[in-house]
Amino acid sequence: IYLRREREQKKKQNKMFTQIILVVGLFLSGRSSAWIHDSFSSSLLPNRRFIHKLKAKKTVFVDGEAGTTGLQVRERLDRHSGIQVVSLDASKRKDIESRREIINSVDAVVLCLPDDAAREAAALAESNVKIVDASTAHRVSDDWVYGFPELCKEQSQRIAITNRVSNPGCYATGFIALTRPLVDAGLLKPQTKLAVSAISGYSGGGKALCKIHEEDQNVEPWGAYGLSLDHKHLPEMAKHSLLNVSPLFLPAVGHFAQGMVVSVLLPHAPSGLHQALEKHYASFGDHGFITVHPPHLDTIIDQNLLNRNNFLDPTKLNGSNNLDPTKL
Image (tube, rainbow, N blue to C red; front, side, top):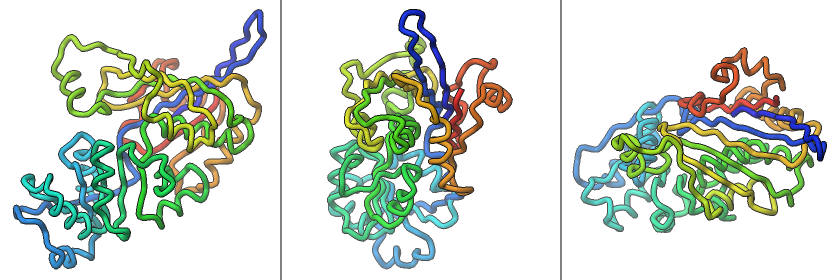
């Protein structure tokens, strides 16, 4: 992410604004170093004895592995030497008892399903099975831990010890990454009503939207949506930023597969903004994935983070797992 601060001196109001802009690389990038998997060629459900033999590796079942998200999760699991991915035969994927058995036979389950289906799948799991839910279903539930390790210094440990983790939404990740440190530092009041605009790649819309953008030559290069101001990420954006009110959020889809820019307009320019971000993310030390850069435009230009020294590229961080904020 890049944090951009723009000061606009109005002639009549003499009012200062701060704009926070983020570029986020999507999707599931580099945190999961090396992954591998061995598919089951048998059409039969793997039994518990076979699963037990694989305990030298951690076993993972990706529920919804044929979807857009599931395919990318599998791609990363493929490269991990300590992971064995367990699959159901396609004919059994909708069989409740087969799914219940495999869910409770593995070490972890990744749910890549629509919200209602994710709730149903989670209900099949015993309490000792680790579940990571990629849907929106459990992101504001008090019984699930929000899977954003940099949310606060205790969050990583909470994720490690719980068996129920909700994966953060893409827009929410960018928004929370900048607003939560400011709220914690007292620079942003919880009752502040923020305005947020964002653009993302089309793959977030699933196979149907991918098909349109990849096959329709007349597809729009840019399209706003969520015009009713009720985007499904709003509850988690407010809750995990510790804001009392949801922001006004205007998302859009661009004609590129992956990548994102999130822009937040603050009603004032709080002093100490850069220092608050720096202090928050410095607490994660060398093992963290967020580096706050010096607050100078020259730094961003020198690091080749702007196209033609002016334009933020939403695809710039694709394939990485790093968030790199700075203040301009």
